[in-house]
Length: 502
Image 1 (tube, rainbow, N blue to C red):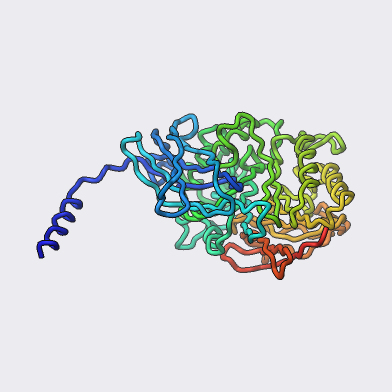
Image 2: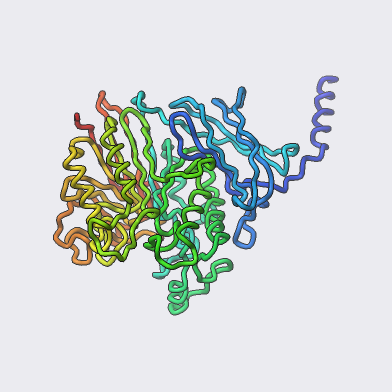
């Protein structure tokens, strides 16, 4: 009884102690990015609230350090230096962690506070380092595009209603579906936020159609400054399903037009968001480049395993004007990136080679556009030259495939050269549409030269969703599996490819 009374006394003391008052939060959770075999970038943002305040999530001055360990106890943990959360970096703390073991699951958390003497501890997150060229371990990832916050929460301009499920406050259902599949990694191919949604044109259209005005914080004009650009990420990543997913999976990111400047933007078009600001914001808001690197490149390749190497392209930073006449002098990727792509492809002995492009290279696409390698008034000359080079260098027999974002419908198609492409489709149901069929005079393939194995080609089949990809050895044979899912995790189409000897 004396022992029990002693325990009760200790419990009373503990309960009666006044806990440290918390006025600093991680309103956007924690996330990891750019996992390699021996390194990763960890990121979080210190905030003054864990909910939106007047449509935004204000930042909070403070300090933080990451703790990384091989188990959840954090015994013998690796600690980063203390990092300052400051207004000039949007109160983001970010650190590249090096010296890790390949093919290893790591646990990490953030110790954060107003100063180093008053620290709180985040929830524990996990990530995996890449197995690397010496391992034939299974590797999997989910690939997405088109995470349109406005269309999901408020409805699109063509009278599509907003999402109305009871789980709306949690965010996009597709994120929950991805988490249930438990992939090793998540890849965002661009349009991660929309700086130009809503815009003045859409707002006027909504008014004309008798719709209610945009809610507070969405007054009908696109983002025009850095504060507005940052706000787009704040409202996006505060959604619980993003935080739940990103705390348990490594991420990789590309940018496209809407999260760079505006629809189909090139570096030369006039807009309040400059070319330089579009680049800066992408590198600030996402764990893509080492913050200590003074001249980072956002095109890169990762040797994920013995059987898989991926290439992630940069489609906005180096492009010629969209309106320039197409020909050998017009480029979407830039000479340096193309040279790098060719050189690294030729060097690779991975069983499967996957190029992940923010925009389509096979299509077909809408004929009126001039934004990508598929469009006749766009960058088709360069695109066709790349396909010719691939064929001339034997890549039809080297298990090379393309995954693309940007298009709002899922498809699996083959270029006349024989190179195949898989389009992820839009993540959000309200951001999806029917795709262009080969042979459609309003498409970039009016002569039906492209072979379409699968396409969401009508309104009934169009849906939000994502692409799941994995490589593993089956009976000793490297096998890649592509799976298209809708946002509720219904399997729509599946393709298996066995590696050809080369």
